[in-house]
Image (spheres, rainbow, N blue to C red):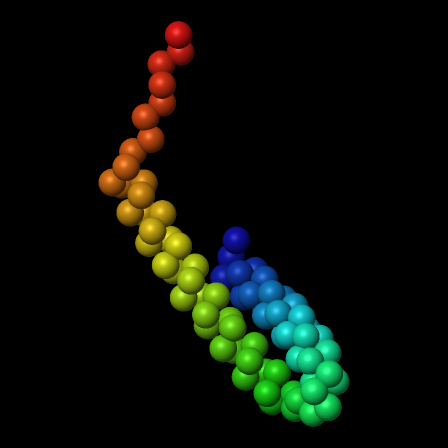
Length: 78
């Protein structure tokens, strides 16, 4: 994919995350009888987006570690 396509996919994913977080926050706010501002939902979305990016980097690093240090041995057919 090109950089423009990557950016478009990232924006759609972030919008979907914002929408999902907004629904959850609205449900919980109704239960508690409080209001959640759009700024709060936006900040929570950014926080979660950053966490997801950090976890994905950790998973990539772990995958590289496993692949390079523990090569897969394919058993010979009998």
